[in-house]
Image (cartoon, rainbow, N blue to C red; front, side, top):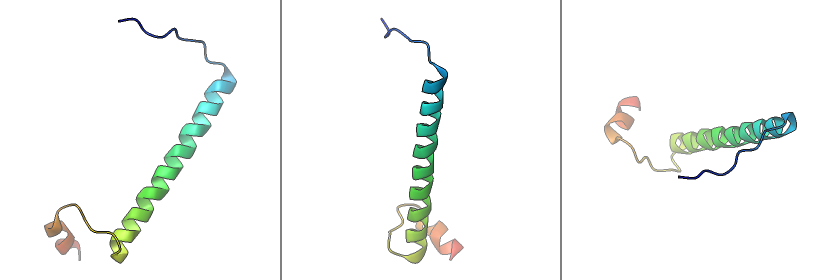
Length: 57
């Protein structure tokens, strides 16, 4: 199998990629928190184990 040729990453490229990854992780964390809050308030249905839900409530 032939792979794409790899290029040498410059410091600016590494910094830009790290910043993008950090922003994506922050967005995903916010999305997880919002979904959790929606489940807590009751606007979003649980797709998991309902026995676990009853035990925690």
